[in-house]
Image 1 (tube, rainbow, N blue to C red):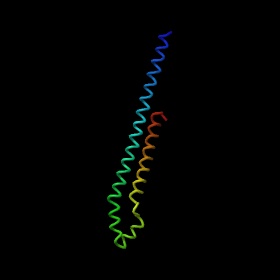
Image 2 (image 1 turned 135 degrees about the vertical axis):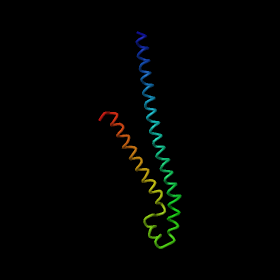
Image 3 (image 1 turned 30 degrees about the vertical axis):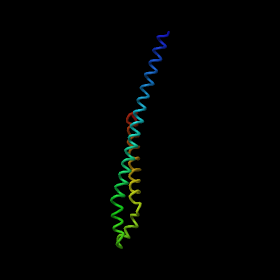
Length: 106
């Protein structure tokens, strides 16, 4: 009887360890995905604010530039970067749903 108890305890310990590694790996992948989205969004916002804002600011000097300023306000870079980040998050979600559906055999 002690051998059977030892066997069951060992099996459940091994199963628990396996499940812990599996969930930890999935969590690490999700954290990496979120970090990639945040890094890409930050890079896009920096690029838009670094390149688009000075160009739009220079165009504001003319009458045509003031008209374009209505379409591209000073916060346009942040808005475009946020829109892109939301689009990337939706794409990541759809890919995850497809992967789950494919692994479940649906």
